[in-house]
Amino acid sequence: MAGYLTTHVLDTARGCPAAGLPITLYRIEGETRTEVRRLVTNADGRTDEQILPEGEFATGVYELVFDAGAYLDANGTPPEEPRFLDKIPLRFGMSEQSHYHVPLLLSPFGYSTYRGS
Image (cartoon, rainbow, N blue to C red; front, side, top):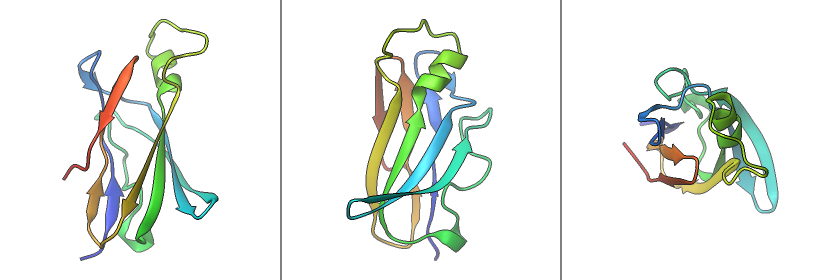
């Protein structure tokens, strides 16, 4: 079985998928942070393709950066200066050839994540 990475972003304040949220994936090697891919969530709060597809999957340390500020701005959340949540970095390790699903539950003042299925 080959590994791959997916996500799903839900806006818990509005009770709907977080459509149009920019996401950037980085690979972390020591002190080096290398951009791997940029995607945007679709109407279901998912990306149209796997964030890290089977053909490109490698175990290691990664970071997903969710651009919550851009999403909140685009969806009419009253602006703050600075916004409480702007970029949300999630650093995690993938140690086996498996499906890694890293969802984000988002509101303007909090978020949570977990390893999903």
